[in-house]
Length: 286
Image (cartoon, rainbow, N blue to C red; front, side, top):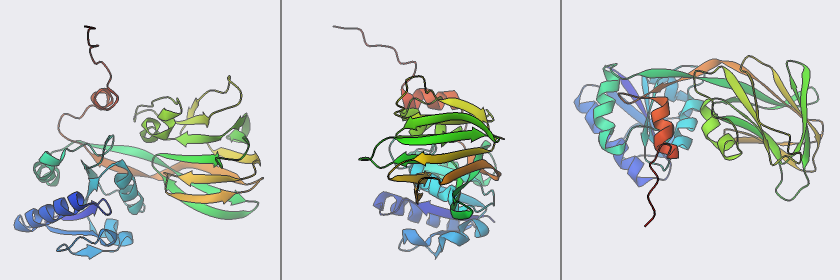
C-alpha cells in the first residue's frame, strides 16, 4: 500500500475536484492519501505542508509549474517522486494531461513510468557576517533592482575569482530546469537536464557585450551588490529578501535533488518542440 500526497493548486476548483476524484480512486484501490492542508479540499484528509514529504511515497501535483515548484520545496531533503498533472497553461514540468491523470497515477504506483533526477542549489543572502535568508532552489535565483530605480552594479565571482561586473537591471542564476523559465525570456541558453551547469543571465545589461554564460554546477557563485538604491533577491519566484549595498548572494549546488515522474515515452526535446512550437511547418501564404 502506497501513501500519496496530493498538492492541488490553491484556489482552483478544477484542482480540488481532481483531488477528490483521485482520493476516492486511491481509497478504492487500497491506498491512502491526503492533501496539503493549505489547499483545504473538502472531503479529503489534510496534513500541514511541512509534513507532506515525510508521510508520502509519491506526490501528485494538480496545477501548473508554479505548484510543482512549491511541491519540490516541501520535500525538505527527502527525494519523494513527483508526478505533475497540468491544470495550468504552458506546463513544462507538469506534463500529465488532465484526461490521463488517473491512468498514469496507476502506472506511477506500479513503478511503470520513467523517473529523472533534477539538481537544486542552496542559496543565501548575506549582510556582512549575518545570513538574512536561505533557500533551496529548483528553477532560479534572481537579484533585481526596483522597477523605478537606476541600474544595479553586480560583481560576480566564480570559485573566488572575479568573473564579471554587470551594470544591469539584475542577474538570473538558473539551473537546467529553470533555463526554460525566466532565464529563457531574458535570452538565456536552454540547458539540457543532463548538463552539469548553471546559467548566469543578465537582465537588460547596459553593455551589449554582457552575454549569458554557463558555469559548472560545482562552482561556488557569489554575487555582490556594489550599487543599487533598491534591490531584492528572489528564489524560485517565491521567497524574497531586500538587499542593501554590500550584501551578497551566495550559491552552491545542493546535496538534495528532485525526482520527476514522466509520462510514457517522455523525451526532453519532444517537450521543447511541443511547448515552444519548434519544427512547425510554416503556413504557405494565400
